[in-house]
Image (tube, rainbow, N blue to C red; front, side, top):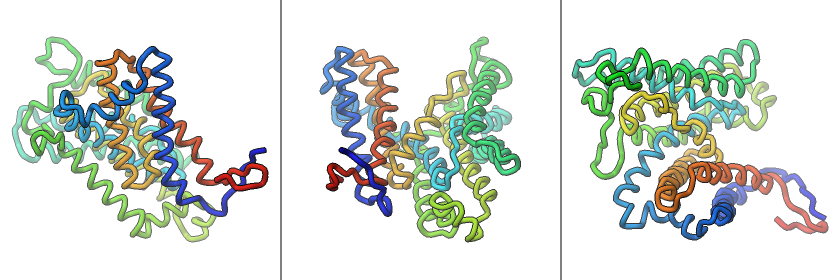
Amino acid sequence: MITFVKRPQPSKFWTIATPVLAVLLTMILGGLLFAAMGKDPVVAIRTIFWDPLFNDQFAAYSRPQLLVKAAPLILIAIGLSLGFKAGIWNIGAEGQYIIGALTGASVGLAFYPLDAWWIFPLMVIAGAFGGFLWAMIPAILKTRFNTNEILVSLMLVYVAEQILASAALGFLRNPEGNGFPGSRNLSQIPAMSNPELISGTGAHWGVVAAFAAVVAAYVLINKHMLGFQIRLTGESPRAARFAGVKDRLLVVFCLGTAGALAGLAGLFEVTGPAGQISIDFGAGYGFTAIIVAFLGRLHPVGILLAGLLLALTFIGGELAQFMLGLPSAAIQVFQGMLLMILLAMDILVNYRVMIANKEAA
C-alpha cells in the first residue's frame, strides 16, 4: 500500500531534481505522443532539442533565435515569480505584455517622422508604465474590494486583445499600408528600432533587460528585506502580518513589478523581432512564462535556464513542424505536458512516498 507522509520541510534534493525529471518524462511521454501520430519519436525529440543548436544545417539561424525567444519569457517570468512567491497570482501577464507594446509603440509613432536619440528610451519608459498601469487594475481591485486577482487579471487579457485589434485596424494602422491592418514597421525606423547589438547573436536590448532582471531579482529575494517579506508572506501570511508586513503594499508592488516587466517585454518585442503592432501580436509569451516561472522553481537563475529551455522548444517545435509535418497543436500539448508533469512531481518535494511502511523516497 502506498501512502504519502508530509515532510517536516520541503526536500532540497527533490526541489532541484524534479524539474530535471519532469523534462525527461516529458521527452518520453512526448515521444509516445509523436509515435501515436505516426512520427519517429527519437527523430522528433532530436529535432526539437538537438538540431536547433548542433545541426549545422539549422544552427546558424536557430542559435541567435534562442536569445530572441528566451528574452521575453525570462523578463515576464521574473516579474511573475515575485508575486507567486508571495501567493499573489497574476495570470494576466499576456495582457500586460500587449498593453506595454501598445503604449510604447503609440508614444514612438506620435513623434514620427522625427529622428531623435531620446525617442526609444521614452518608448521603453512608456512600455513599462503601460504594463504597470494595466496590472494596477487587479491590484487596486484586490486591495480595495478583495477581488480575486486570478480572475481579474485573466479577464483583462481578453480586453487587451480587443484593444490590440482596435489599434491594428484603427488608430495605429499604417496610413501608407494600403488599408492592411497593422502599424508602421518600427524595426525599420532608426529612432524606434531595437536592433541586434552584437551581430549573429540575436542579443538586443530586451536580452540585456532580461539578464539585468535576473540579477536584480536574485539580489532582491536573497539580500533585501523586501525579498524576505515576499518569501515570508508566501510561506506564512499570518506570520507576515504579525511581523508587520503590509500585505496591500506587497500586492501593489508584486503586481506592478510584474506588469512593468511584461510591458517592457512587449515593447522590446514590437520594436525588434515582431516589428509592428498587428492583430496577432500577442504570441502567448505571458502564458508560457508561467511554465517558465514554475519550471525554474521561482528562482531567478532557474528561470533563466527554464526560459532558454522553453525557447528551445519553441524553435525546435517550429523546426519539427517544417521538417516532420507535426501540427502546432502537438507542440503546444508537449509544452503544456511539461508544466503538468512538473506540478504532479511536486508531491515528492513536500511528501515522502511510503510503501509497506518503508521509505521509498
